[in-house]
Length: 350
Image 1: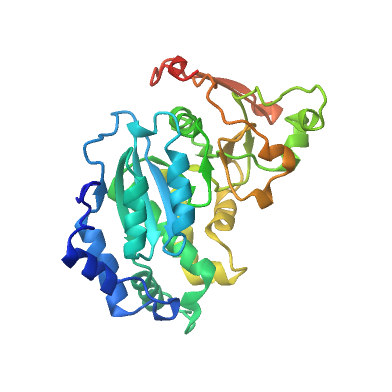
Image 2: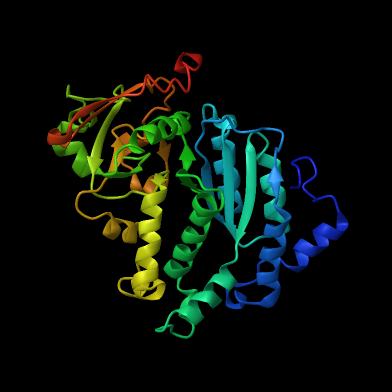
């Protein structure tokens, strides 16, 4: 791969190649040079910080972005640097489209962990879908949700099927990971590996309804004394829905999603409600399967979806990751003891 100090960006020939093959306007999404450009970059195996090797016991992070979202991507990378122990894992950056400026921005900010960079061959994916889907409609490949779904499947394929991980935590470029983000996923991934009924670990809450259920946070948000408050960093609950903001997924759940798309058809799945992949995941979840949520979130996203109280949630360093409690629903309440894993001594960061 091309290292962080060089990354080929100082080489006139490389710069000229990237510039000439840069992602065009979406109307030319299937242009030959665009398809050739992503193939060219992906074959380079762009790697940053190859000297920083992940620890033996780690789970990868996957950051998804879009070539026009340069500022969002740089903001996400800046914040990710403050995440505890993030230098002990690896990051996949998967981008739809590319420009020379985007590569320079990634190289500027991604200096602190091992990183592999890939570019979604969205034009090739659309051409593949057009030939494989019987009910393909001319021009429909530009549908926004359809492209988002293709990009999601392609990105997850990198982590699960190419690198053969069994769990990956995904963060989008408009998310801001809190310091507790990586350890939250690392420790709970150990627990859910042995629970076939829990397919994903969330990093945000499941919404106001759960704040009210069993008074998970309602009293606290109203300034009253309640069962739990923002100090309860180890309190979890189960829900039958997916909130894909900073979520971690098990490989078997991804394969179920992929099967749903292939069986029902990518285009048909989207056209029946123009569903994004998160809506499809909720359909796939089904009876008897759950996602695991924290009462206190481990990342933040678009403030339009947060109440004023939620925007004041603290940045966490002090969770005891060796012990959690699932408190809702009451019939499934249990204590999770992870002291045997001894992956990290969290007193290092208290």
